Length: 250
Ligand SMILES: NC(=O)C1=CN([C@@H]2O[C@H](COP(=O)(O)OP(=O)(O)OC[C@H]3O[C@@H](n4cnc5c(N)ncnc54)[C@H](O)[C@@H]3O)[C@@H](O)[C@H]2O)C=CC1
Ligand SMILES: O=C(O)C1=N[C@H](C(=O)O)C[C@H](O)C1
View 1 (cartoon, rainbow, N blue to C red):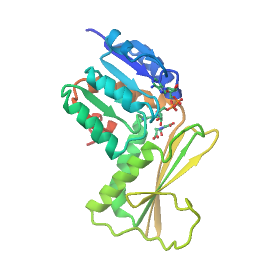
View 2 (view 1 turned 90 degrees about the vertical axis):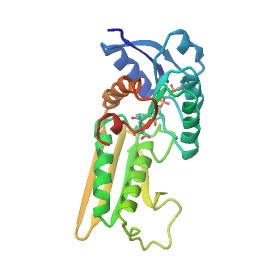
View 3 (view 1 turned 180 degrees about the vertical axis):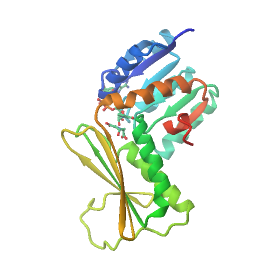
View 4 (view 1 turned 135 degrees about the vertical axis):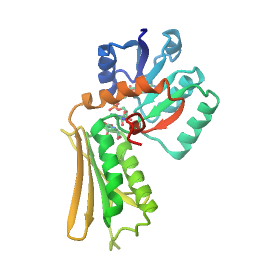
């Protein structure tokens, strides 16, 4: 059987360099291009890439995806910075290239995907839910894509269940003291040397708390998800948001 022809964008970055190694080591894949900032995207078509793994920056991702979708190259995207406007723009590009698939995965690690699922299940059963994400200090965005998605899923689950707004008597606070508000869910971002990527979802109710915590201790934690995404995206036309859809978690 022929190997899947995969290219990595952001190949010299923290996660991109790990993805290059993972694709090279995968028996069913061939790494056909490894591009960094300033490299010519035409290399992707010249190399016959079938799937691009996009691990660059929020400032670069849209231009790269525009190119990929226009050329019918499937994409697996880990880069953050997704807004409703960006998703709508991408949907428009995909409508014009209906056979192309794009997976956007706020987090490729299986544990993080499960954390989001567990939080979504637990959220309606507690009065209070807050998210704390903790990352290395080189990260350019806050809150993390994972925390934003987690908070959105929590907010959706609580709204669907008809939950009351969370109790919070704060009337005076320093700017930022209560974190960011994502759909009514507070999200706190810690940046600390020595960390990689971590998240806690804190849930509180009458006389009890539940904490759901996940720790990525090495960039290798993201690689099974990257490879799974590359294998599945070729048969999933259109936009898939979240690796859970390829894990049959719903
Ligand atoms: N979804 C997930 O599981 C994960 C997502 N990420 C996300 O991936 C992104 C990258 O993270 P890091 O590797 O930590 O950042 P990084 O800064 O180490 O790497 C980004 C790389 O992309 C390169 N780059 C920038 N523009 C480019 C372009 N137009 N074409 C090709 N390369 C370009 C940069 O020169 C740099 O080498 C961030 O948005 C981060 O949040 C990171 C880890 C896991
Ligand atoms: O920048 C990172 O490192 C990470 N980014 C992603 C995010 O913003 O959620 C995924 C993971 O947390 C690592």
